[in-house]
Length: 198
Image (cartoon, rainbow, N blue to C red; front, side, top):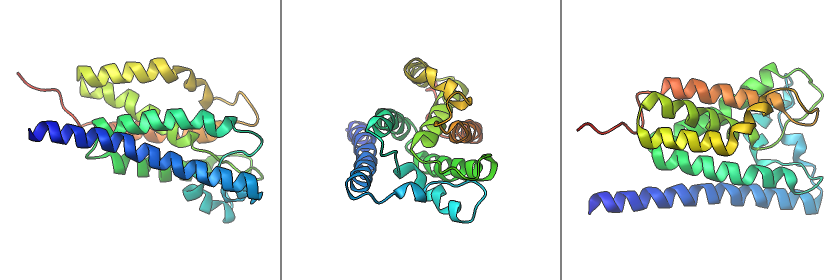
């Protein structure tokens, strides 16, 4: 009975927390869009003092040209964050915070163009993608490996996003998040779910 209740709670958390994050993202997007607040200025501006605040705020801010940027980020962050919370409940908060802050700092420190603002949730998405893919293989646990294959199948084309293919896309942000995700998968390889022993 306790196991069933715990599983239900974990499932609810894996649904509710991503939805809350999406709600905050969309509220900020709509307020910015309709009140013309130019919140892009709170993104990461590399190697500048003013750009440091973007490490915290960048994931909440999306392009105002149309809805494509935030829509493209909404489904992956919901799926990947929900997966993280469900399977890695005990370390999920640490993983998301390290990806959020660590990826943002790497972007701020290493990105080349100091006159560009980097915005969007995609760096966090790439971090979760990298973490879930590599961690699933470290665990040698069939359900997690299946999740890793699912993530790779659904979002495998994302790997091209870490290369400088389009000028308007922050490939440095993608790469920064992805590297932090891989690093965390290695650092937490002994944490999280383990394969049952028979």
